[in-house]
Length: 224
Image 1 (spheres, rainbow, N blue to C red):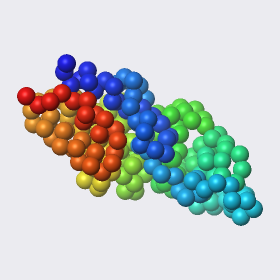
Image 2: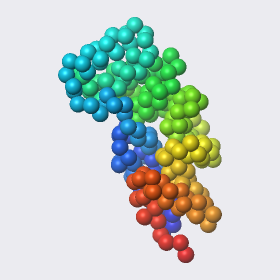
Image 3: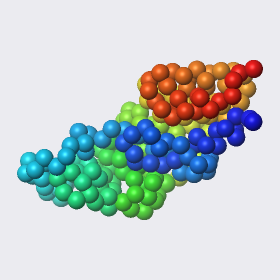
Image 4: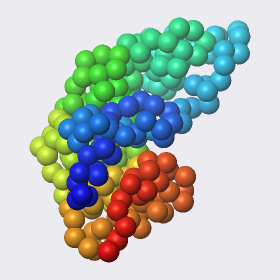
């Protein structure tokens, strides 16, 4: 069985998961992975009572007064349901607002939601633009997502070679999903050198506890 058939199970799927599990796609044309990232501490806290609720209320109030740092915080409160009810639609809206005001991290989060169609309309061109802006601000996770959109032609003309180069740059800055995605492309390109480089990349990622790379590496046939 060739590498492509093995790879069909390991293609990117858009997700907003905060863990690295669930990164496998059912087929190559399914929605690409939006790389996982631990949410800020507030998203991992249980409702701590009045203090958390007050902080959420304050962020929402200040966001309405166009404090974009507050809008960025409000997005996490809304998405995680911390200090109140989870509201993906409002998370989508406040992150879009802050992204429009050139807040790179909000662009990353808005891009994730717009690409997945979570909390609002699925909008690949808007997601690509948001990721591209955040990438230019040196958010490497945004760069990886920019590469994914190039790889699959989501909101931008498909360009697998440019995607590979973007993944290479993000990998050089230790963005583990960029490293994994580059290995995927190398294996798809085929050839002994690409195969060897991809396997080495996957092993290094696995050593860094990135489970999708471990799983993919284990699925590959032995070298002849």
